[in-house]
Each structure stands twice: as C-alpha cells, then as structure tokens.
Image (cartoon, rainbow, N blue to C red; front, side, top):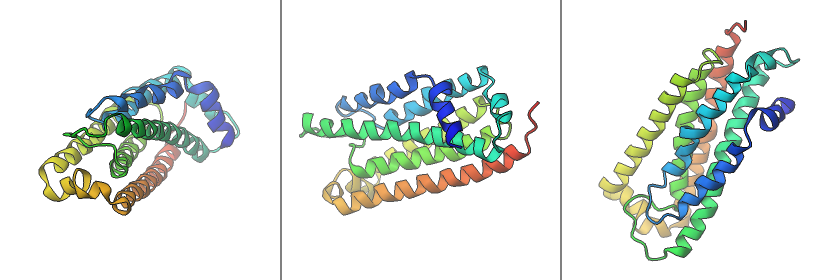
Length: 218
C-alpha cells in the first residue's frame, strides 16, 4: 500500500496540486471573505483534474497489474485524497493566524476562521468524501458525476451552516459572539469535526472496497 501511495504522490499527482494549497491558503488573508471557499477549491480544482489525470494515464489498469489487492488500491487512493485535503486545511489554518493579526478589529458577516469553523470545514470535507468516494468506485473509472454530486453536497452543507450562523441566535453566539472566546467549546467543535471526518472517510472506504471488488477491469 505504501508503494501505491508513493506512486500516486510522485507520478500520478501533478506537482501543481501540492502548490495549490499554499496559493489557496493565502486567500485567508482577504478580510471578511467567504472562508468556506478555501477548502472547497480542493473539490472545485484538485479532484476533477487529479482524477482526470489518473484516467488519461490509464492508472487503474496499471495498478491492477501490480502485485496488490483491490483493497490496497482503494486505501492508497483515499490516503492521497486525505493528504491533499489536510494540506489545504492546515495551510489555510496557518494563514488564518495572520488574518487575525492583520485585521484585529474586523467585523465578520461570514464565519471568522476560529477553531470551530475548521471543525465545520472538516465536516464539509467528510461529506464530500463519503459521496465522492462511494460513487466513484462504482466503476473506479468515471469521476464526473461523483465530483459534481459530492461538490454540490459540500457546498450545500457550507451554505446551510453559514445560513444557520447568521439566522440562529444560538449558532451565531458560538461563532460570532461569546463562544469565540470559549477555547474549550471551539476545540470541542474542531474535535467533533475531526471525528466525523475520520468516520465518514472510513465508511466511504468500506463502501468503495465492496463496490470495487465487483468491478471487472478490462
């Protein structure tokens, strides 16, 4: 499995997609922006282009002739997806530190990048993973419909979460009011998001393995 991951990271994934998280992360420096868009660029740009590259390289056929199981093929591909997702999130979180220092008195209409916000971003990516990975491995080849559906689900979650932050007094207090100073609360939201991300991705992995086992590679 390790060799499959390294194959993808060194040969399958264009170097540009390792630079993109740094560029997208810098968008956190825009004051008062819709920060949900920063990790969403992984869904908008990285996934369709990366899987398009895998398809053009006939990567699936190449992987199946290697002395590895289908289970390892799925596990390695999901590992690569998670690595890139975490790169997008961690670099964005790093830039958000400078955002608070540059604009200490800024009034936010959209969510400010407090720790709880990153918990919501993890949930958003968890939703993307479970939809995209499950759908993609029906064929392990086609990725268009899976990308569109998963991205739409992630955007829908972001929209509903943002709407709740504006319209619900309880949610608004957590992300805009006194809750922003409650480190324990913010950390608990972040940890809850991380747990959901792990659980959803593991469920997606199990579904993908079952579906990929039924796929005949011609």
